[in-house]
Structure formats: C-alpha cells, structure tokens
Amino acid sequence: MPRSGAEARRRLQQAALELYRERGFDQTTTAEIAARAGVNERTFFRHFPDKREVLFDGESDLRAALTRAVAEAPHDLPLEILLCAFRKVEGILEGNRPFAEPRLHVIAATPALRERDLAKAASIVEALAEALRQRGVSDRLAGLAAQTGWAAFHQALHAWIDDPSQSLDAHLLQAFDDLRALSATAPSAQAPPGDRPRRQ
Amino acid sequence: MPRSGAEARRRLQQAALELYRERGFDQTTTAEIAARAGVNERTFFRHFPDKREVLFDGESDLRAALTRAVAEAPHDLPLEILLCAFRKVEGILEGNRPFAEPRLHVIAATPALRERDLAKAASIVEALAEALRQRGVSDRLAGLAAQTGWAAFHQALHAWIDDPSQSLDAHLLQAFDDLRALSATAPSAQAPPGDRPRRQ
Image 1 (tube, rainbow over the protein chains, first blue to last red):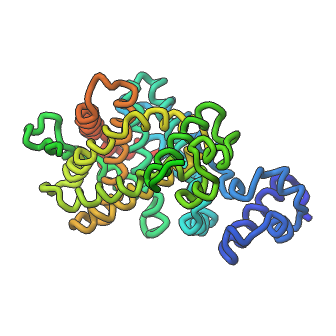
Image 2 (cartoon, rainbow over the protein chains, first blue to last red; image 1 turned 45 degrees about the horizontal axis):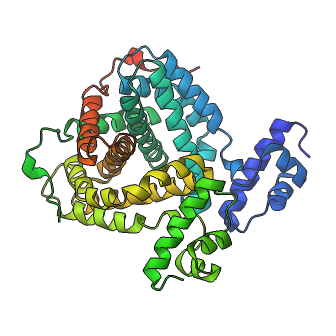
Image 3 (cartoon, rainbow over the protein chains, first blue to last red; image 1 turned 120 degrees about the vertical axis):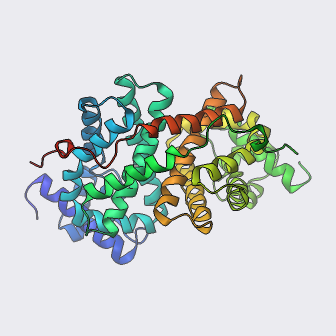
C-alpha cells in the first residue's frame, strides 16, 4: 500500500485513467479504481468526491496560477495580459503531459467527463474575467477577453497534444496570432443597413 | 388535460421552469412537473429524457438554423459569416424572451443545469466550426472563429437579457465591435524574447 497521502492520490488518478481507457468511464467503479491503486475505497473518497473529480485534480492549482499571473502581468491590454498569464503556466502543463494526453482522449470520449471539463473551464474563464476586472478592464471587455483568450489557449493545448514537434509556447503564440488575424476582420457595427436580415 | 402533444410539451416546460424557480431544481421531481402541467409522468418521459433536458428544447432548432445560415451567408471571412448567422436567428430568440429570461437565471443558479448548458453550447460551437470548414475555412481557424464568435453572441444575449432597452441586434453588433477592439490590440508572436517567462 502506498505510504503517503500524495502518493495514494497520484496512484488513484493513474488507476482511474487506465481503467477509463480500458473499460470506459461508465463501466468503472470507484472500488475498482481503489483496488488498481492498491488502496481501499474509503481512501478514494478521502481524496475525491466522485469518479469524475479524480481526473480534474490540477484545475484549482491552474486557476490560482493563472489569476495570480493576470494580477502580476506587466501589460495593460487584456489579451496581452492573458497571453502572458498562459505562458507562465506552460511549465505546469508540460510537466503533466504524459497524464494530459490520455486524459484528453478519455474526456473527449465520455459525455459525463466532457460536461465536467466544460464546467471547470467555465470556472477558470470566470476567474480570469474577474482578475481582469480587478485590473480595471471594463466588465464587458473582461468577459469577452477571458472567453476568447481561453479559446486560443484551449486550441493551443489541443494542437500541442496532437503535434508535439512544436513547443506549447509556439502553439500558444500561433493561436494568439490566429485570434488577432480573425478578430481584426470582425465586422463593424457600421455595417450597411442592408446587411440586416429582414424579419418575416 | 392538454389535448395536443405540442401543447403538453409547452406546458411541461413552463411548469418545470416555475418549479425550478420556486423550489430549486434539486427539490423538484418529474412527477411534480407533470402534475403542475396537468399531465401524467409517463407523458413527461415521452417528451423529455430527464428533468434537465426540459429546459433545452430549443437547442437543436437553434443549431440547425445557425449552421444553415453559415452555409448561406453571403460573406467570406469567418467572423462576418458568423455575425450574419447570429443575426438570422435573432427572431427566434426575441420570440422566446419571456421564457429565456427566467430560464437563464435558473441555469445560472443550478450547477447541474450549467453543465448541461455548457455542453449544449459546446455542441453548437462544434457544429458552427464544422459549417465553417465546409465553407473552406481552415481547420485551425474554424474552431477558433466558432469559439470566438460564440463568445460574442453569448455576451450579447446576456447583455440583452439584462438591458432590453436596446435590441438584441444592437447588443450583437456591440459585442462584435468589442471583439474587434480587443484583438486589434492582441500581442503578436513577434514579442521580444524577454517576454518569454524563464523556466525554473
């Protein structure tokens, strides 16, 4: 049996990920995860409230690191601040890559885990928006900046998982370049009135 | 008892919304929703698989209308195409406003409904990205454009619920203007090397 709590926790996460890949999330019980990790089921529930949370352990650390980075970023413009913050957490993500890759595949294949993943992402986006507001960004722009910056970060993360020949940093810079290129061409409110669809 | 299936469906949705507001989602049973709507519980399950779905009835219609509008939009740039598509569905949303406003509040207050809402939004974003790819937008830009456009649309929708003194269309144009303003200032990949955080 693993000695320390941290070691048990790590083994539970690894065991859950393996079992979800082998049998699917729905077909795996917490008792089986505990058995594979060499602990009893009570230990599972000491560490995680349910069998979804076992795959989302790093989210609160990531959120905390990102909001701190937003507060400290030596920039003024919202997307500059966010890019700087995302670059600061690259090390966390790179260190976690061996776990992250199979984890993303399991999540993509499991609706219950996708819902939880989206909820975690929404919570980080909300925290980023709040951190931007704290820096004086207007309420409206803070929400939109956090959403779009997160979309670029998310895209970079997936691109990096698919193509590790480039660094996460390179993918991140590419995604923010894409975002800029896209949005520079966002249509203006001064669109001709004919652009407005007619109501039936 | 309501005669037609469509009428029963509408009454079930209204009853569910009322009960979720009065007692909360977790404290409401499908039997209670059925009773309030004047139908039996079997009828509930003929219309909806669970008590979450009862609040998400319009999503597949919205997704279909949006993807069709993307296919038909007389534009070339991804965000132009998306703005055009969002404007096309304004009528659907405006007609649904009396239901939409309390619905958004119930969803915001209920984690289980928020997760479902996020999953529905993710499914629409994926459909929009696919519709953009069908129009020849590159895989990478399609995903990011769909996310970004959706973020602006979502922001406009919430702003309109909070402030109906302006039309949904005005809020939508404002959100796309915000998007452009944000990204005009997004940092470039040609950031100075000193901007890269040092690794520990």
